[in-house]
Image (cartoon, one colour):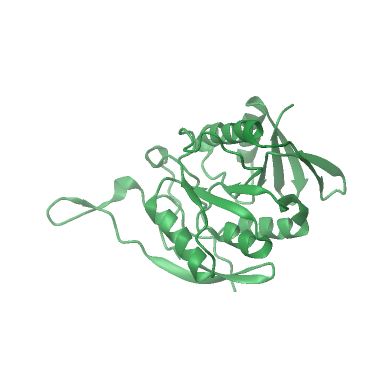
Amino acid sequence: METAFFSAASLFHADDDSDDDGGGTRDEAQVGAEGESQQPALEYEERIHKFPGVDLSIREFSSHQLNANLLWPGTFFFADWLVKNPSILDGQRILELGSGTGALAIFLRKTFGVDITTSDYDDKDIEENIAHNCRVNKLDVLPHIRHTWGDPFPILQPDWNIVIASDILLYVKQYPNLITTLSFLLEESDLNSQKSVCTNITTKAGTQVAARHPMFLMSWRRRIGKDQSIFFDGCEKAGLEVQHLGDLVYLINKKR
């Protein structure tokens, strides 16, 4: 089956984004007969997507004003990478940023039984769609956090060991907001976790990398060019260390 492409609704401030990736914006609401602003009805497509060892039925928005619509390649490549490195996930509490449809989190829950929380832009439709996708794949609804990058995080004392994301670097102007949220999560999770643990990860080149908890693991395959270097440079300036593990998977930790 042909793989669909998905914009991982990246917890953006909708009012700031002028980029259009096939969905509408809040300013494009339809106007009713009496001049009242009306949002267009959401349309969905239900598709079967092949993940390692399992097929998932995922309902995707045909279009959505916040860009949380279809699956992108990074989700599948990241799933493959995690299957090859399962020890990273053992016993860890995981938060996914920019969950979109929730497909990656659902896959990880079904395959590894991990403790995982989804998150995305503060939007009811996205949250309800993730819940729907959990149910049709015979899972209890995963915990979900509605949050816009750069805004105060709704959980003041987070203690996740691992934060993950795939293909979330869509809008360059949102990188500072993402880095603000990521810095908070890594800093506070480090303070609130019961113990600091290191996990050895083997890179594609065969070298061993000591990954400290809490960590951010990200797969990025959406764009080719210098945009991603802008994000990584911003991370370095914010006191974060970036390491490429191969296969376009990146590890980000707080600098010691």
